[in-house]
Amino acid sequence: MTAVAPEAIATAPRAPGLLALRHVTGVSLVAIGALVAGVCLADRPRDPLAAVIAIVGLSLSVPAATGVLLLAVYRPDRRRPAGLARSAGLGRSAGFGRPAGLGRPAGLVLVPAGAAALAACIAGQAGGGGLWPWVTPPALAAAAALAAIPLPRVPTTLIGSGVTASATAAATADWWQGITGALAFACCVAAILAQVWIWEMAERAPRDEAAAAVGAERDRFAAELHDIQGHSLQVIVLKSELAARLAATDPERAAAEMREVETLARDALRDTRDVARGRRPVALATEIANAVGVLTAAGITCRADQTAATVGQERLLGLVVREATTNMLRHSTATRAAITLTAGEGTGVTLTVTNDAPLPPSAAAGQGGLDHLARRIAIAGGRLTWRHEPDRFEVVARLPGAQAGPAHPDAAVVARLPGAQAAPAHPDAATARLPGAQAAPAHPDAAG
Image (cartoon, rainbow, N blue to C red):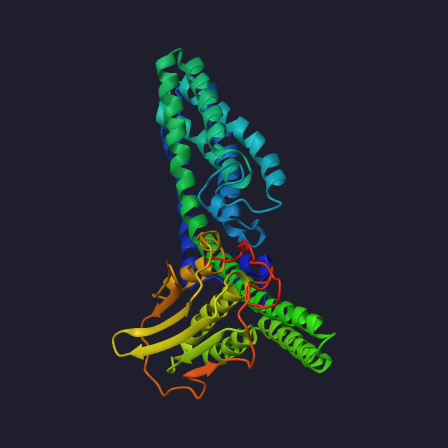
């Protein structure tokens, strides 16, 4: 598996449509700044002193706020990586386009700009101007601060509305006018931020999709590594304990078992390396043949009846065979098992694994391997089910779109080790068939 760094996700090349949207957002912000200046100048106060204060405040605040808004849109290369919760606008850290490193410089610019905008708002209304034109300069400054500085959205807007309401009420000596000013301030802030929000969501979507893809690949890697290590270690434990018991009575067979343990360990190491390099195929025929051999070594008569399946289905079906085999070894006291694979036109492919000793109910509580595989098969359009009967446990996997093929040479295998005897389960391997072993409790990782 090749990991993708967050920096690579954040700085991935953008599509032409996304670049066009960024330019459209920048043009709309410039238009909003020009509109604010235009409507305020068209409603200049009649009082000369108030007009001078209002125009000076307007000339200081509008260009500064518009510049900060443009900087928040045109510097995406310095954005902090954002998660899905931040994309939804939840919490303190959720915001509209906050480039890393822009907060302090933006604050140094917006503090005097905000003061100038508030002075223009008071002078404009006190000198005879209307409410709506002169409430827009402080709203523009507040929107720029929320776009560039990590401030909580709602509390900051409420505080700004309260300050604007107080300034309007003081300038007009009318508290109802102040309440109207607070509402107008909040609406203007929301309208301006909506422009930045649209761009931010569009710019963030590819990064979130890439991050989600990386997370899914990590989950797949972890699941495949669990399948390899869990199955291999279980067989190694079984054969190691068998060799230990045979060491005193049959040294040659014990040595043969340990050589098999070495082979299994080397195979597991090779498979782990292949998984890490992303080049390990899961061959269904190999998994079925291995399952027959492992179950036979544990003293279970196993029959396999197989027809070929398409390559796309072999991976999931091979994992089902491996998980069902591991569960039999760990939790069951079966003496007979069967693996059947059928494929037909219009019916897809069906894999059935059965044994004659059902798992304890606690071993199939809906958590672990089978449950995880059921979700993966459902994503592929199939279905994985398992059911208990008094003398039978059955796992059935169905996938659509299979093409029937020739039977594999390992099909219809009926295998049994000479002299293998059924016995109670071993603590770690339920079908170890070792004298005096006890049935194993359900493992938390086993789903069925």
